[in-house]
Image (cartoon, rainbow, N blue to C red; front, side, top):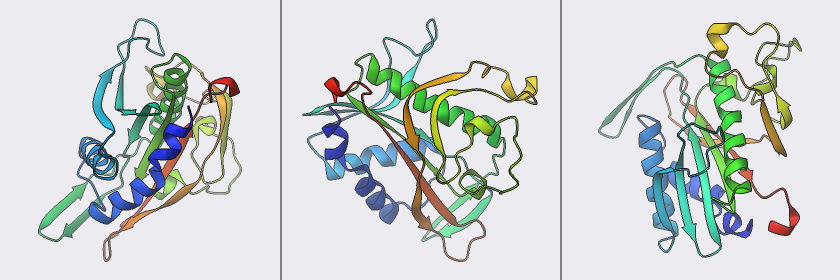
Length: 225
């Protein structure tokens, strides 16, 4: 039931989260704070972290879902990513130092894989709907450089306005160091138009603009929606 996702109103959740925690120390910190924000806004919702998946998207592999929500309208699976650029900022009495992670090709593959995984979780009944959430201060994830050249990771780019659907695979120029452990093409059953929204801004900090990408996933079969 897609209504489970609508009732949660993750746009509102992210806005409230940004007001309370404009930046995170790590992806684990983000996961915990998102879970707490959902609890604050929806105290009746059961929030579970790192739940083992009985039917993994890749047979024979162990998989966990980052956040699994138990609502009156069904379960909602959420996958998270927090790719960062270098940042050092004092937030009240707290020093936040983030690394420049780089490896954007690998990270974008992993985000598309998360969309693929959440589609699988919905299709197999682990959840009735889901979402992938990315928060980043690395502009290269949402800004198209505009050169128009195909790259090894063109199929996985997350630029503003991109539509992800169908089979997504590495380009011919992709090297084994990049694709190792990420070789399979990712088959998406839905169509996902990417829209980045403002998350927070750390005033006076270089690379202090954070934006969020929210990709909802709902059943592709209208009978299950």
